[in-house]
Length: 176
Image 1: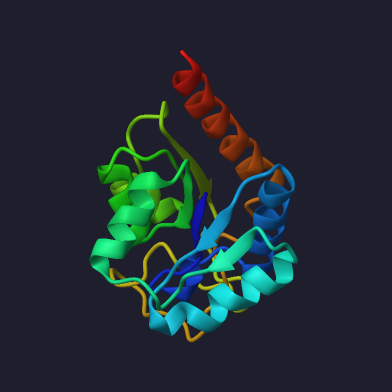
Image 2 (image 1 turned 90 degrees about the horizontal axis):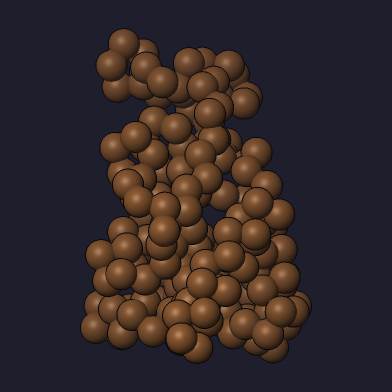
């Protein structure tokens, strides 16, 4: 299993503690979990790996070139990520994905099919700190100064269940 906790816009990032909880649960089920990211996400990935508290959870953030990333993703049983380049790349490679999306982005960038790709969308429409309508940013409203996650309300149990479902499907195909 591969996790990518980064996203260009911090408001689209699922909280690190939720990724750590997910990684720990998957490791407890026997999965090897690799957390990826570029060099700017290295501290985040290492913190998640440490918080997961399992030898089966490692960080490869900052250590992979594009060829290494593609090779790792291609071998993954499932990729869990925010709406980010590595999630889209995994989807293009035909690897099962579980995506964490904000409503405005899932419409434009979410996977269309659900046999290999699961989508969790947050329908938060206001900044959790100041209440500004975030659906109009760039259109009729300026962006507020806050970087609070708009996807923090997505629960770990739901994401974990999709990971288990996709993993079971992969094992069933392998055994057929």
